[in-house]
Length: 487
Image 1 (cartoon, one colour):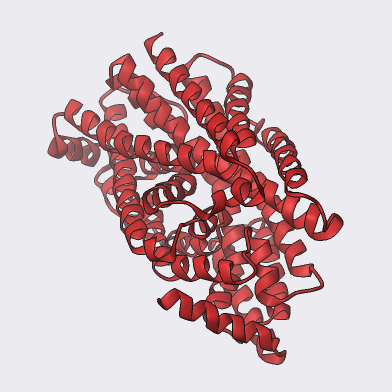
Image 2 (cartoon, one colour; image 1 turned 180 degrees about the horizontal axis):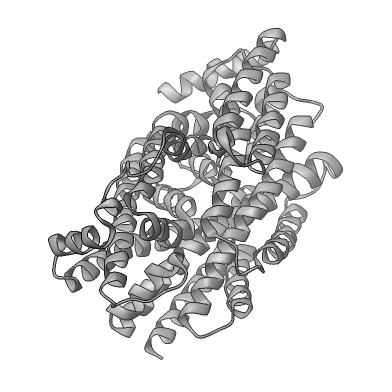
């Protein structure tokens, strides 16, 4: 009962932030970009929290629990990718989106950056966002259902709907402001949960050396080796997760929402520190969970529930409630961001960009809110299968965005010669490659689909850009944005 009460207080707090965000939202820029008012701390933690999702507290500990340190290669790739994203993309994207007609969404930026009067680039971008984010959101819904069903003796379906209703409510009401502030709070909760629980678990086992002894004896040392039974394709695939950062709209939009590009260094330090500590915590949690199971102190069927069960078994009900709230935080912080970016694609890029060019801000905010409900319902239907893997759904959507958007974001920020034709063809090729590659098994097709998708997009975008000519105003705007970023 104590755990449940703690949980309810947390959920009530998130809804309260949604209501406050509703009162602070007066126009479209407020709803989708927070009026570019994010401080470095809020931007960094909200970017990290929306990035990591339930994957950090369910998927990664589950992978380490099941396969040992072999699964840590993903963490290495992600840490490198996140740092490079803050280092090279954040500052330029913040300034360029402001210079380029004050763009408030990624498709909006692409259209303005490439002066695409045909609206094809905006349309293709919006389709990519809606397709992959619906799957990505379904991964979060799946994680939420597992959390509620494991923690409160609910069925999978009941857990799915309870989690979905809360998340939809505060995102629907408060938009970007509510999402960023809830993500900030959720990021802090996740940070402390990933420090506290592994320490408690390792102490329960008698210390770090004893934990290593248990794992080593139970697995003949295999669980403690990063290269045990793993080939080059597997290592490259796991490291390639880092490529995905350059194309994730729900992370990139945090860069766009910063008060100033001068806040990037501070935000980068906060965000990178948060991520590295969080990833280490998730790895230690997975290892400790494996050791606890070998000692008969933990019994579970689904490895992705290891963090949940450790919270319940090892801590006081009050602390367990906080830790479970942290898991829900990880899930909610990503779903809300995905729903918001998806709704902006429907409202700003489809509804206004193609059908109702003179739509008022109030009308577009209403359309955005209705879009959140529609997209969430579709995601719930996808997530209704309890056999879904959180990690499997995330990896597919992550690859889709990384391969479709990543090369185009990088080229648009660092190469003034890139053209709309190159961007359109490259983006389509990247997205289609991911969909096709992911459905073929065996041999070279075991390579993570983001790798061929990213490379094909990059090559086609460069070749076709060299074969066509950029508009003069594009090059002028590029120089203006570059100079502004250097100030």
